[in-house]
Image (tube, rainbow, N blue to C red):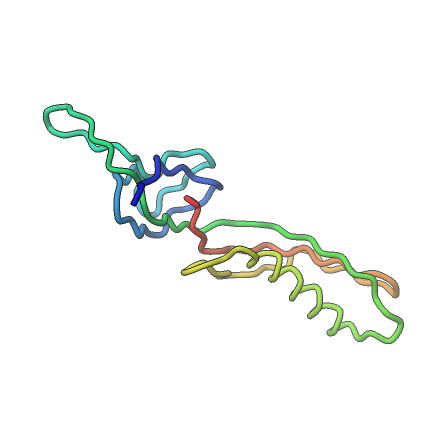
Length: 134
């Protein structure tokens, strides 16, 4: 199979672990990385200085942070707990869309919850474990 080129961070985070079948890991576990950081190089350099293209295959998992804000129009007889649960479910679905394998939400912190007769707003901070080298 064709191996891919080097893997770069698609978003910032703290490296959790690697599941790599090919390539040269360039960062360490528990290291903070910014978007665009080289995570796995596709070139191996021999002791003689020769470059060998080995490709970079696998996943680099990191703890990431995302803030999501969701809004909702409320119905006249809707209970507050129903409103909150609905908003929380929507925010979680938005966060999880595209997750695969080991990816998951680890922690949720409500930053803001506002409600009145007609509308409701929920702002939530997610800490997730994601493959940042997709």
